[in-house]
Length: 287
Length: 268
Image (cartoon, rainbow over all chains, first blue to last red; front, top):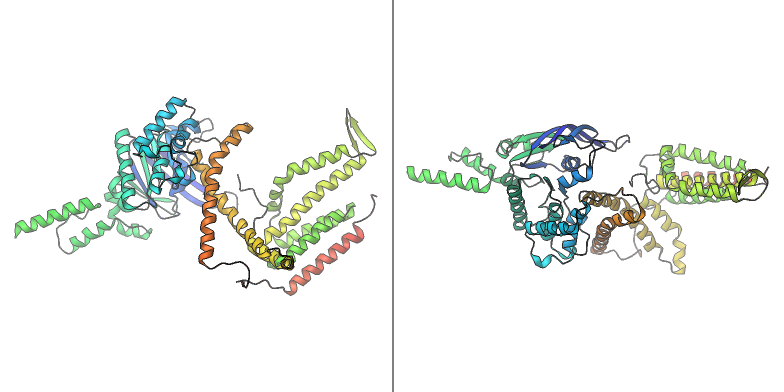
């Protein structure tokens, strides 16, 4: 049970002079329950890749298998696929349209053809999961703040009970507190339900502290694939692609260079804090 | 879905027609349209077709693009053709049940379809070779005399420019909204009129909201740059009339004369 991309390529506007290769020969295996971070510069093919995963786009060549079945086979049920592989787009404004929040969240499950009771239950459950206050349930989604809209959009997909949950820049345009809340929520959901999560992000700090595995895209190619620690070690390669490791990795590395005995593989603020305090403690002990 | 739309799409290459002043292209197009309505025999249509093919060749826009733009009016052309074919009275050449085809019917049907095709292709040469901005600039300057009778020419032109500029933006937005809703299980390929209309709601509501938001932002941005209408406004790229525009105008006059001399006459 997993998501497999086998030699997948994708080009826009095939057959015209505007032809553009967006993805070149991508091979990825994503096992169930993994929290994957997808990073890359603007135009690196991240958005194209995630749209291939739920069948919104068809690969120009190569195959994508979900649970052992080719999702682009002509007899594959694409509607079920879209409920199993849920995709939350970057801008909630693109999907909110109903007169109130609750109805809007009901929209997804209703499209799956479930009966009304089940639809309502799922919507309620999803809104609870994203921790939206009950006061907002019957308000217009357009009156909400950015962070709340994001929650409603996430709930709208969650209500379809996806097994693979893909989020495109879920923290874009949110303040630090709002973005941390959203990410913690996603992390908890992943832990509780055991679903696979693919997080597309520009923010290395976010990726470092939440994901199990990082995929780095550049110019339509998959350049790196590994644990956050492994990927963020290669700062030079990252900077050639216009990316940076989390700020804190540069700090611990500088400290190490200056002869301060810290563990320079720290990639999150809390890890860095721990190793710096540890080193200080030993230094004081030795004196 | 919306990618087949050619009408009003600029084809960015360099050609003698691309280099013409927007005003000459507009006047030229009007002359062409008048000529298509004026000719009434097949020699006239031949002249018009030959002229059109020449213009397309000079414009260096692939003919494929022109034909693609016709897709939207194919239904209209078929209807116009069929109605004329069956309903025009005259000398019957074929009949079955209540349907009958007359010699005159065939004649008008062919001419009608040809006329529609020529009109669309003729005017799409203008839109394919002129950027929307220079087109509205040209229109503004051509219609400037209307200011005298208190028609706000500049404002209308500005509205047109903005509307044209927003077509690709909204198309892209539409595409994104469609994908977002498809990810929520909407089936846009659903059969049936009511179902189809219903599936438009989740598309149109976000689109309208975003259009209003963009309109608001744009108005604010324009005001922040002290936009206050056309009075005393100068242009970054003022329109200039060159010798090649004069040549184009003369060619169009010559073409019109040809049409008048040879293209008009009774059915032979």
